[in-house]
Amino acid sequence: MSRRDILIVENNSDDLFFLKRALRNAHVTDNLHSVSEGRTAIAYLSGKNEYADRARYPLPWLIFLDLKLPYKTGIEVLEFIRGQPELQHMNVVVVTSSEDDKDMRRTTELGVNAYLMKPPSAYVLERLFASPQLTPPREPARLAYASGLGDSDGGEPALAMATATAAHAPAPLRALTRKSARNPWRYLYEAPSKETLLLIIAAVIGAAAVIFLIIAATQ
Image (cartoon, rainbow, N blue to C red):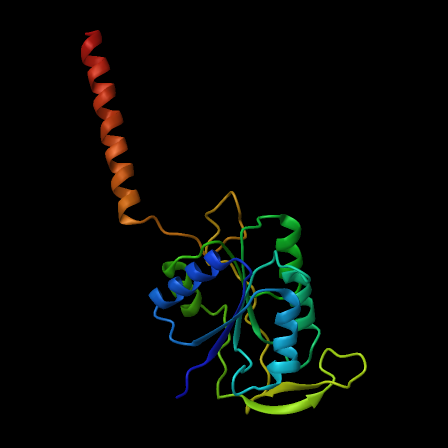
C-alpha cells in the first residue's frame, strides 16, 4: 500500500518543525507536504500553476491548518475547502494558538475534524489518528482533471479527487474529553508527563513536610 499524503499549512518555521517532529514521534509515516500561506494552500488544492503536477503535489487526505496566515486566513482556506464539492469531505485539523471562541465556533460550523492547540504532542496526535475524528480514504484516490475548481472563469484546470467508494462526510465532531475548563473545545488534551507527575508529588511531599515542621514548632 502506498503512503498517504498530508498537507501542513503553517507560516511559522518553528511550529512547522515541532509539528513534523511530533508526527514522526507519533509514528505517522505519511508523506508530509507544507505551504506557508493561505493563497498558496488554495492554489495547491486547486491544482493551479506548478501544483497542477499531482505526481509531485498530490491531493492530501488530511490537512493541518493554522488560522493565523498571511494573505488568506486559515478560516478563509477552510471556507474554500468546504465550498468545493471535490474537497468538502477532506479531513481538516486546525492547529493554532488561538483560543478565541469566535474562531472555535466558526471552524466548527465549517466542519473541522479537530481543533488542537500549539504545539500538539505526539501523545495528542496518536490519540487523534486512533480516534473516529478522521475519516481515512478506503481506497487510493483516483485523480481526474476538472476545470474551474475555485475559479470564476473556469479557465484554470484543477485536479478533482474521486474515490472508488461514495464520498463520506467527516465524522461528527465529538469531545473525547472536556476536562479542560480553560478551553472546553480542546478535547484532545495533554496527559501529564512523568516528569510533571514527579514534580507534583515532590511538591506535595514538600508542603506536607513544611506543615509538619510548623505544627511541631508550635507545640
